[in-house]
Length: 205
Image (cartoon, rainbow, N blue to C red; front, side, top):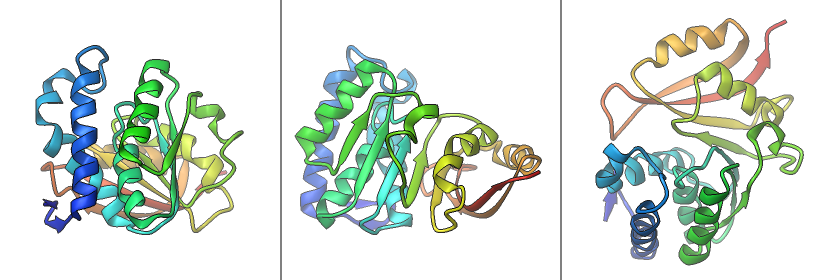
């Protein structure tokens, strides 16, 4: 199988298929994603989420903020399972969604753990990481507030943040409060969408 034009191993494909079936089961009773996108799970959510790992395909430690239905955190954890190393800390304060995420990790063999806490307090239990991800969570200035505890004084920590067509406006807003290095990756899944790669984050004085 290929995701975003990149071949995926049989083992990882099988894990993704297990996740897909589990997602369909749980989504009947829990609102895991917007109802209008639920029927396009593979392209709209799984392939879209896979882009994150494909941009940094290494056995690293991730923090996934607002993991919700598992995008991109569970997908990243499944790719890490093939590497046999790396870890995803999935931060999700909604208890029902946190239960789903725990079940997904257990059934897919994904490399990760669930932290059922508010994002603002997550850094108290997750001391450091190499990468941060977030999807459909908040505007960029707020996301950078969330990311700052792990990126402050750590120039090698990188955040990968999904953004839609208004991302340029969000970048302008963020630049009024933050300094950062920025790379823009065009989405392989959705027109007018990007993944913002952010590093060397510092709050402006």
